[in-house]
Length: 149
Image 1 (tube, rainbow, N blue to C red):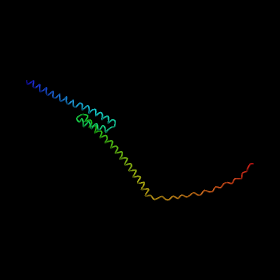
Image 2 (spheres, rainbow, N blue to C red):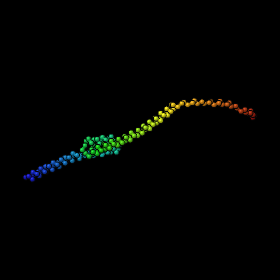
Image 3 (tube, rainbow, N blue to C red):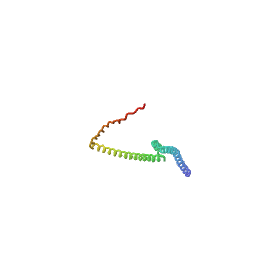
């Protein structure tokens, strides 16, 4: 009798554990599959250059499927997107700073030229002498022509 009771309790415990495992698998596998599909979509968006759309997909994965492997991958992907965009912005900012420095140098050089022109004494007036009037051309005297009749 004691043995039967033990077997009955053991069977109940094993059945409960198997039921819990099956319930866990039934509840988590579809979530993993859906999260994996969203993750592939987001990766395709990244490859196509649609970072904003991919960022939205990754955020949706994290919010809707927080305990999946896809959520962890989405978190890492969001961090890498932010890091790459930060590097791109830093490079663009450095380029703009170089352009600004070059423009400031040009402005400084032009201001120096303007000050040099402003402080220089005015040039002496240029006197242009009028050319002498052209001499009258005299026509050479031709001998009278003979007319042939």
